[in-house]
Image (tube, rainbow, N blue to C red; front, side, top):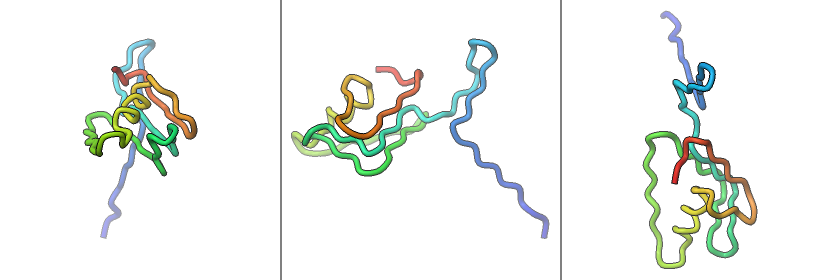
Length: 89
């Protein structure tokens, strides 16, 4: 039986000078983020291009806080928040 070639690509970017022609990288990544008592993310949340994110919860659950951290409007008290230049508000 012939071998099957497999290819896995993650966070690929290609530019010619200042012109980016391919950007398949992660748009935003939150790892172990905490903001006071409002938001606590244990583990990693990575958002890829074209991906949809559903955020649900009761009043005061931290939905808006999460979106503000993703947008860069609010820095977390702990953990890391990384955003690419392609993420816009």
